[in-house]
Image 1 (cartoon, rainbow, N blue to C red):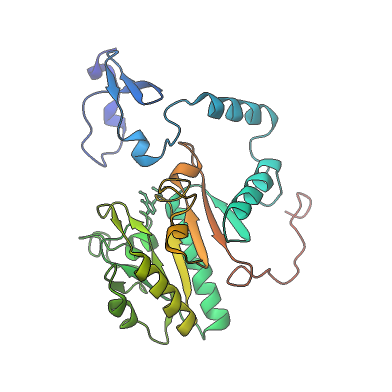
Image 2 (image 1 turned 45 degrees about the vertical axis):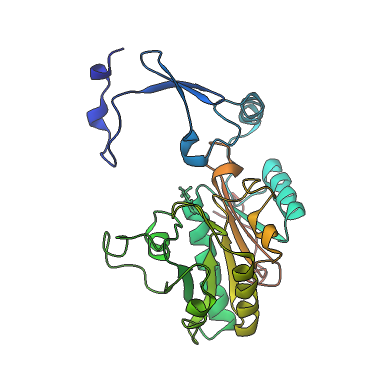
Length: 281
Ligand SMILES: Cc1ncc(COP(=O)(O)O)c(C=O)c1O
């Protein structure tokens, strides 16, 4: 089929796209509508950690789709429980919440921190984030991000995200006040240009968080799931954060993300509440 025959005008413009339509992917290679092959260094923006159309993923997706698609997050399902246990076994965290995208997991982290601030820190809600950071494309995660120009593009921003400099502990300390509830960063800034937070900085942040009773949040949407040599990048700096978010690699190309936290910190169990059932909804 010629490119001109595709209904590209029906798609909302978000970015300049080359005049080709990808029709197949296998491992590291993509094929376009003319049968031309491309060695793919993009891999869905660092998402397909097993490459395109990996056989183990196909088998898992086909097997599960024959059994059950979606019983609602208000009920347990077997893969949800199995994956939550694998994630808590592999990390320093005890609780998992699943989401569809990295931005959504980060929104969850922000909400959890604000909830914790309301309960334990007189309504403190400010989360110190880093200049040049990237946390997603929802309004709150854009406001948390330190990307140039993002403060005005969909103004006004969601308030409560003062920006510090990566690897400059004094710039973080300067921003801490009685409204501060958390510090949030990528252990290696991804979109900002592959800039690692130093081991000293990460350890310093842990100390600051402990001193001022703040939550230490790591956004491992890009660095998690084995990308940096350990399962999670926080392990490289010898610190244990309170909250971690995962995306990209955890789904290998399908929409999956997760928010993890420790049992003591924000995810305390809600007061006993009857589980919703189909009969009560
Ligand atoms: C560090 C980081 N956090 C969050 C996100 C947002 O993830 P998603 O695009 O799945 O919403 C990204 C995406 O590139 C990212 O690199």
